[in-house]
Image (cartoon, rainbow, N blue to C red; front, side, top):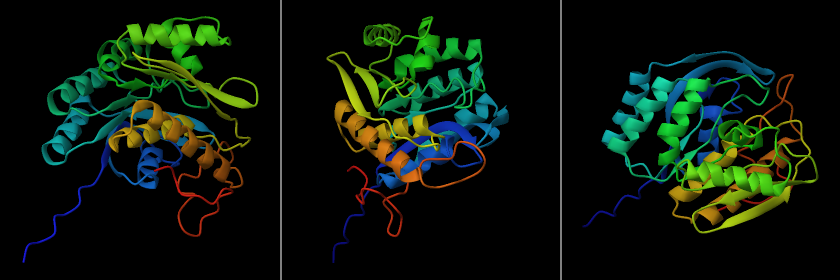
Length: 285
């Protein structure tokens, strides 16, 4: 009697730093992948000492060890999409880029984590240079917020007009990214307006700005949700739209919870049975 073929997992690999408080970094990425029906794999680049109040210290793992983590996974498991977050060392950035070029061919979302949400720098000038030269050309999508985009493009002061944000996105595309999503969460107003630019279109995507003190890991969550959508075969625009909706609901669902003395995390697993969710719906398919 023939055996039934086993189903294959949809896999997403996160290459990022570890956040012991569980709100951001590797931990937020894995929660997001699971919530969206993907199997998460991880490569740790940096270990941080942090809590909801901020980052106290960080330690970069040796570049060769980071590369070895990637190679070992690639030797065994098919990867459907990749998300890269915090990488503080230029040597590690170069090692990641070289290893990915030689081992994997999957959609790559690059979240340019240059500082923590509390303002602690997590990347040096040499690291930014390596990121632009090595990782940006590999990215199917790069997802900076407005301050990060301004830093990467040398724009000062911080832009507030849409035309200036569109110009930054164009600069980043010309530097090598296939597509750019500039996140507008740092702007004032009642809506969160993000600008998505690819080789074929530029579109503003608006969503409600959620009133919540718990925003730790918002950028990690959004970029990971986009990677999950790409892993499932969604087009870029739909993957971004779905990820924005998932992130908004995770923010909304986490607003009523308390963890620690600072900015708490999103509620990534809001749709699990027994969990509280204002909208009472499943994550975006």
